[in-house]
Image (cartoon, rainbow, N blue to C red; front, side):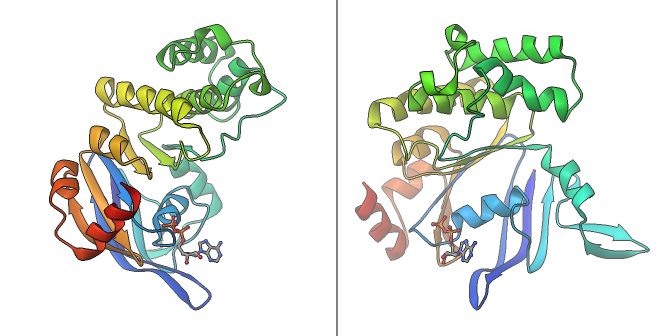
Length: 251
Ligand code: ADP
């Protein structure tokens, strides 16, 4: 579902990703862990097309995200192509980024109606189902400021799912929340993991969540994958000293 082939990303002289390879299968839930600055968020931003690669290619499903074939040659993707592929990807950020001037329902229906061209009726029906999934059916008419941080984040998850993405990207989605509210959000994702086969790529410091929900954990250091294992193995029996040091610092 996601494939990075020799992906290079630089910011000035800073080579953040140096020929990175990795792949995520359909339905797989993969968590990226590692010290701050190791390139995890950059990977999500590349997938959201908020950044462009300096080398290599990224595929999402059948589509190449980074390049298009033109006259027999691969050339960097244009904005139209990026928009098309980006629709297959949902993202939830650390800051919930809900539209403050819209009620919960409209926050969820806005993009399906205006980007996907769904009817308001269909979009609202789906929004109600999703609000049930995230346990917020009673908040349908609330404005974001009337909700707790945890509730806002659950609306953000419903909003991302309303676009029927193939891939859900989660970037430190509980870091701005108190532990209790973070637990609510993680419970919703645990349920989602149990009941759907959506492909998930998460960046998190919530190691218990990584352990409960992921099929695989990738440990990053300086833009490289230093360890790639199922969570039980990685957490109980880390092979690399870098992984051991990192886990000591967060557990
Ligand atoms: P992580 O998510 O693992 O903390 P990031 O992907 O955010 O790491 O950052 C990786 C590296 O890229 C860091 O050295 C960071 O300073 C650099 N970086 C990220 N975004 C930018 C940017 N927009 N401009 C310049 N440098 C950046």
